[in-house]
Amino acid sequence: MSHPYPEGFNPPKAPLDPDNPAPEKMLPFLLRYPILAGALFGIVLRLLFSGHAGSSWSAMAGGFIYFAPVAIGATTVYLAERQRRRSWAYYFYAPFLATALFVAGTLAIMIEGIICAIVIVPMFAVMGGIGGFVMGIVCRVTNWPQPAVYSLGAIPLMLGLLGNAIPTPDNHGSIQRSMRVAASPEVVWKHLNAATDIRPAEVGEAWAFRIGAPMPISGVTRDGKNGEHLRATTWGRNVHFDEVVDKRDWQPQRRIRWTYRFTPDSFPPGSLDDHVMIGGQYFDLLDTTYTLEPQGRETVVTVKVNYRISTQFNLYADWVAQWLLGDFGDVILRFYKTRSEARV
Image 1 (cartoon, rainbow, N blue to C red):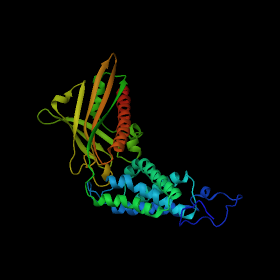
Image 2: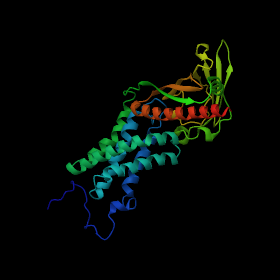
Image 3: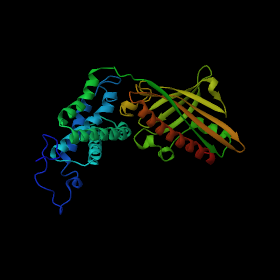
Image 4: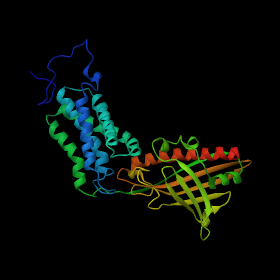
């Protein structure tokens, strides 16, 4: 007698009891094994991809970022299908849970930082769902689910062995935000160049700080050499660096532009996740420009930030950068607006 299960699969021994909850609704109790197994497989892959920044065995390598969650999703669905036929919805939400547990596991064993974990979860969830859905189709319409799951699980490893065959392009982007301030350019200019004793309540709503980035404490401009001005900036967790203003970019009450100067001790260990280190392999702030335009008794303040990202998944990384930097631009303009209008 024929049945709808692929060859080698074990269907349920007896029909489900209609008086009891369906097993899928009892997640994670009856289905915890395939989901936990998928998460464990992901942690093993992450341990393998612990190479130095820029290497094909780095956790930022395209082979890992794209295909590790696909492999997790495929493994989860394959093991679940070995128990019994699953729904189409299961093919997506079980890999979602497995990838979420995988990311949580990397945090628990301290091989991943909170910022990286939060920003990568959406992409991992989607890629994991794709892997699970593909494996679900394979399990329903073919007789070779086992070779398929082995193949999907091997893809990140094969790409790691290929070395740097996948290019890592530099992508330059920018964000720009404007805000009207009920104060003169002179007042706004003063606060731009003497932002001291910044309180968490003034900037803490920015998503970059909510997910773990250190908050700014002060930014004070001082005269430098050869007409330069140096804006000494300090953040929490002992982060410190200079923002260099060339004399051509110093136009009092009108415009200021600075580039960033980092030193080896600008970011002490643990102050930022290695994968999102400013000035690092994958991300950098290039320059920031503030423009002040008087309009009657008010001033329109515009901030523009140029940045670089260098990953094998720049499309997603640029979306994250646009979101976080754009949100930060809105928050920092509100900070200067509040201080300027209060005449602090």
